[in-house]
Image (cartoon, rainbow, N blue to C red; front, side, top):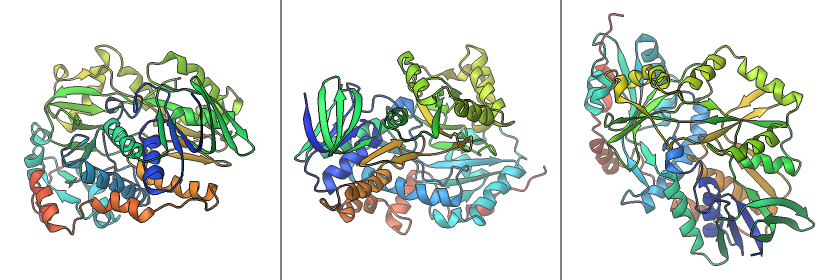
Amino acid sequence: MSGKYDLIIVGGGISGASLLYTTAKFTDIDSIALIEKEPELAAINTHRTNNSQTLHFGDIETNYTLEKAEEVKEGAELLAGYLEHYDGDREMHSKRGKMVLGVGDEEVETLERRYDEEGFGDLFPKLRAIGREEIAELEPKVVEGRDPDREMLALQTPDGYVVDYGAVTESLVERADEEVGVDVYTGTKVTDITPTLDGYTLETDAGRFDCDVATVAAGSHSLQIAKELGYGEDKVLLPVAGSFFLADDLLNGKVYTLQMKKLPFAAVHGDADVHDQSITRFGPTAKLVPALERGRISTVSDFVDVFGLNAASFLSYANILSDRILLPYVLRNLLYDLPKVGPKAFLPHVQKVVPSVELDDIERAKGYGGVRPQIVDTKNKSLDMGEAKIVGEDIIFNITPSPGASTCLKNAMKDTRTLMDFFDGEYEFDESAFRADTIDNFPRADDSTEFASSNAANGAGSVDAVDDVPASDD
């Protein structure tokens, strides 16, 4: 097996698939190949059991600043528009309401300030502040068993997209593969990438490939490959393995809790599985692991390659893990994998969402959870949260922890613009057609018919529900 292509994309997860779809459908690049090392697409972090199945808009993620939410919002709407366009039968996603829950004076004040003063209510027209009574209508188990005198407030929206990113990956690749000049190779592991005078040579276990331009969208392995080519020397990875606990049918939609201050990882939340609403997932946990893929001992050596075993890496880890908030959090998360001890230690987090849950109601999810590579800047000895991109000479490396899946199409759009520069104007990107196929199909709040039907489907009440917040004796 061998081939010569204008563009080769390494990685068949949601990021690689998004770029393949965007370049194949909306540019006139003559020949494109996608190469994936696993026999199937979306086999690792993109698989539906290995991520939170959440399409992050930034509306209920309280660790997002307004600026971060503005950036993520467009990316989420691009993917939501694709789903609205191509998944009318809901085979790739479910549409359910979602909320971030505040309990007690301090949390309620935080949400009120976020909604009214910090601009989130303006940025997200469908987001509403609702009180205890309406929370109980939408999510009865969230209110059941909770102190009736304790103040409650939630920011709720019908735009709760629960996504099977693996199915979306397959859909994107199928649409791209309809185009002439597109080839998809699975079960093909890239063993080496070498710069040449006119591009790159990729050695694989199935033969040699040549290309003018390359993009590496291989998750944690992207930084490993970048370093082999002399890029990203000031970066290492802090691999975080996420897992979940399962319970029977408890929630109708997604319920987030408020983010702990200074904590870089996602707040615990509860939601129903994308394909089985009778299963409620609680998580994620966040355990540090010395591997680039969950449950694969072979990727421990890959982690060592990325880490480098040098003073800068060790000092960066020491600086990050010595934080008085982060260190206890890391240690607590080590407990959650232990039999008997783990569920008991995690139970209070579940009860923050559903107070009536008891220990026998939850169990550790087997076969759930992937590895998210958090980026560490060894110059500043700090965590760089979110997606990372390294742009080299005619090559792009994407390292995409959360919310990489949510912004996959926006990331692909940006990368396609960069690719057009790499090709020195030889090809064109029809961005207006790309938007027509994606974000133009996203239902807006000013579409009264769509918005009303979405609210009805999610049990939402009046927009004035903020006035229903009960007084508190606290």
